[in-house]
Image (cartoon, rainbow, N blue to C red; front, top):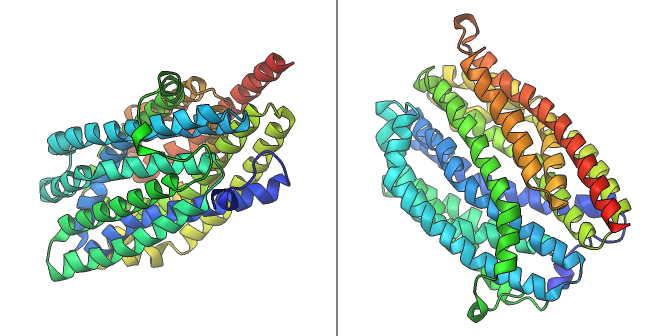
Length: 452
């Protein structure tokens, strides 16, 4: 059963295998986004734009906390992929049984921090008083069930490293439908507002986590999960942390720059916040398409590095870069072209909010193909087992530029505009991609020489 779902990364036509591997990741990620999209749509339809702003105001700080630990799931994926490529079945077994308790610990830590400090974080971001209470309620419930999200992400990374991208898609499809139904029930029948959509998301994540763990338990290869063998294996934990921790730090620092940008967005008022929150959700659908190719590059290159197939690694990177660039143009322009209609799904009581949302879509979605090639180059470096260089490059190239932009150019009164604020994204993506590509060439050459 497991082998039928797995797609070969070590042989066969690259373009076809990469596309067929990536499509389920894209669909799975889109369904994950539907969790939050359903939240925004339901509260926008039944509770108004203030509730939309309340949910949207939580996204930056939620990503800041969650993405740090999600980085460890990246380390899990690379560790499993390289062991599979090297046919190190014991290494795969140890990595799987180290990943699950790691996910559990990460979830518990996130719950403690998120529930206790959510209101403090929101106040530090300058969240308006009329939004603060609802945002705090949403975050407390969301973080109360965050362990399920951790278990799902770590387990899904194992399946993807083994070539199975279809199972996570199936599970998110089931959970996504349940999430939408529960959203409507909790908000319309029980009048729970943002608390209802947060509870629906938590229940849905629990279902997807249970399904993915059951799948691992039913596998017939070295990725099979056996609960009684759970433990922290030192070598595998060390590798997961060595690769995953820099990825987590990078993601968190990305989120810090986004927190600062969200604080800047807050300065334009709650109507602009509402439009930006809805546009950011639409933008997220474009981003996950880009990020799917990041995951593909990471796992394909990880397995081929384990198998010492260096010629194939260069071809993988080239195919992923071209594919993500084309996908980015199609997705980004589509999001902008249909922008007003899409925004009107989220916002029904403010044309100004829709107009503000279109500004964000113009400056972020149209050039999103650049973000895509930047993400693929980052995934390629991590797949090569090199996680610190992309972290450093991204911190300086993305976070550094955006933070510097906010405190220099954006702080000048005549440039204190949404357009100027959002322009920092494209500039930072371009610089970071160029440096990441140079770093990949250096790492690739070093690894290939070691093999000779």
